[in-house]
Every structure is written in structure tokens, then in C-alpha cells.
Amino acid sequence: MTDDKDVLRDVWFGRIPTCFTLYQDEITEREAEPYYLLLPRISYLTLVTDKVKKHFQKVMRQEEVSEIWFEYEGTPLKWHYPIGLLFDLHASNTALPWSITVHFKNFPEKDLLHCHSKDVIEAHFMACIKEADALKHKSQVINEMQKKDHKQLWMGLQNDKFEQFWAINRKLMEYPPEDNGFRYIPFRIYQATTERPFIQKLFRPIASGGQLHTLGDLLKDVCPGAITPE
Amino acid sequence: ESSDDSQVAGVCTTEEVIRYEYHVLYSSSYQVPVLYFRACFLDGRPLTLEEIWRSVHVCYQDRLQEGPWDTITQQEHPILGQPFFVLHPCRTNEFISAVLAGQQEHDRHTNYIILWLSTVGPVVGLNLPLSYAKVAPEQNSNTDSA
Image (spheres, each protein chain N blue to C red):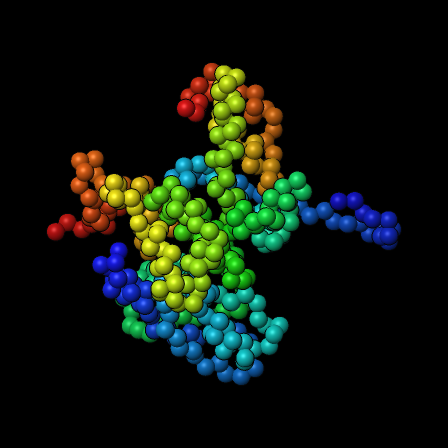
């Protein structure tokens, strides 16, 4: 993993320039200017948009404001998906900045999870980390960590602190030298075109003959339609 | 709920009717079944997470309060893509193994799903009728756990 530090940093510091515009039917006391922000790909919308919320609430009356939610071209954006995933799924072919519409009314109960506090985001993030470790290490590494280590992972993400995050995450990315890899690879494949939200299956990093599986092997196995013939 | 004595005659408390929908899914990551559910009032208004936590039976409230975020949360249904509440599977293996070990000692046939659902269901309002436990052994033979 130390050899890959440049790649790890590039992934962590990836940003998407975004323009937030208030939905036209929201009731305002004066005109709402759009708000521009560079969004971290690896974070979550509701974690990084406090300034967006404050900006638009300044021109609205208290009684007109309930839970914030975001939408792109009519599609409610699932805050529990990483921002980079949302962009790649919905807007990767369009010109930057990414234009997101901000709502404070008519929360779409059938589409979006509620996010009333940062605790909800933390619970979701930690649940993902735990499930990934269940696949990689039968939960041994995550369960052996203390609560303060779990907290450090979350704080690292919340405060955009690469070193703080990876001090703990590197343990989740290691495996004993006698093994050649994790037990199973934690992955999810998202496609904009399917009904099912994602594909997730058990997949071992090593084939029965001992060779390392490639990304192509994974795709052939779980999502053959994604691979176009040469 | 009963009306209290201070109520004006002719006015009665309305009992809230809540409609629950339960789904049993299998988690390949944890290799256990997982209970997904949603709940709404008759007018269609969905319950909030706080309302769900409050509706957990009183005998499970202590465990819930120890770690509500580790017990019941709102999550995306992995097939339908819609918000559901989920009873977390993390502790399932602990108590299921203990019960299964006891069953095998008595050489009783075990339907894993019924055993599991009768244990976790009541936490979130799902009480299996006893008739589920009376399925004859021959019918169970395909579902014995190793």
C-alpha cells in the first residue's frame, strides 16, 4: 500500500466542481444566488453541504425550510452514495460544473433515506466499513480496533484528513503474509441503466489455480454485459 | 391504548393503525438472513426512525438504547432501491449458534428461518403464529442446518 501512496492521495483529493441552485418553487424573500463548491468525490453530499444550506436559508423564512435534499435533472440524489459515484452515474458525460438543484420541501420519502444529523452519515459510513471488513477479514480487524480508532476513521473523512484516515485504514487494507489477499473483495457495481441499485456478490481475489484475479475476471463473472467484445 | 379518565365524554383517543411490510433477505457478506421492513400510518405517512425506535417492544428497549445506530437504521433495499428499516445482522450469528447447538443436542429438526424469524421478528413487531413451529419433521428435512 505504501507504494500506492500517490494513487491513494489522488483518489482522496479528487474533486468535482459543482453549482448549487435553489429549486424555483421554493419560497424566498429575495433572489437566491447559485452557490459554487468543489465537492470531494469520496465524501457524502449531506456531510459537505452545510455552507450550501446556510447560503439558501439566508433568503428563506424558517417555516419554509425542512429537510434539505438534492436533485439532478429530476432525479433525487441518494446522499448515502459517495459523491463521485453520483457524478459518474448521472452526469459524467455533461460539461462541468455539475448543476445540482437544492430542495427544502416535499422530501421524496420513497426515494431517499432521511439524514437528520451527522450521526446518520457516521452510522452509514461505519456500516459500510464493517461490511467490507466482514468480506475481507471475517470482521476480525474491525472488531479488534477500539472505539477511538473507528472514530478516527470517521473524523478523518469528515475533516478531510488523509493521514488521520489512512493511519487506521491501512490496517483494514492489510492481510497476513501467508495469505495472498483478502478473503473476498468488497465491491459493488452500479449501472444507471438497471432496476437493481447495484450488483454485489462474493468474489475471491485468487483463482483456484493460485493466479490473481483481474478486474476483467470480476466483470466477466458478475456483469458480463458490461464487457463489450473487442 | 385506553382513554384516560380526564378526557371529555364523547371524545375518544384514536388508536393509530400502522401497516408493516416485512422482507427477509440474505446477506452474502454476513452469511445470515436480514429483516427489512417498512411501516406507515393508514394515510400513507411513513414512520420516522425515531418513531420506529419508540415502537420497539419495551423488553428490547435497553438493548436498543445501548446502540440504536447498531440495531435499527434506515437503509436502501438492495433489490428495490427504496428506503427500508433494517434490523442489523451483526449479532445474529451469536445467538443463533447458541440456539442451534441446543437443538442438535436434542436431535430435533430445525428450520433455520423460522428459528431466526421467531427470535428477531418480535423486536420489530413481527410475531409468528405458533402454527409455524408445528411443521412436521419430514417437511423440514430439506432445510436442516449443518
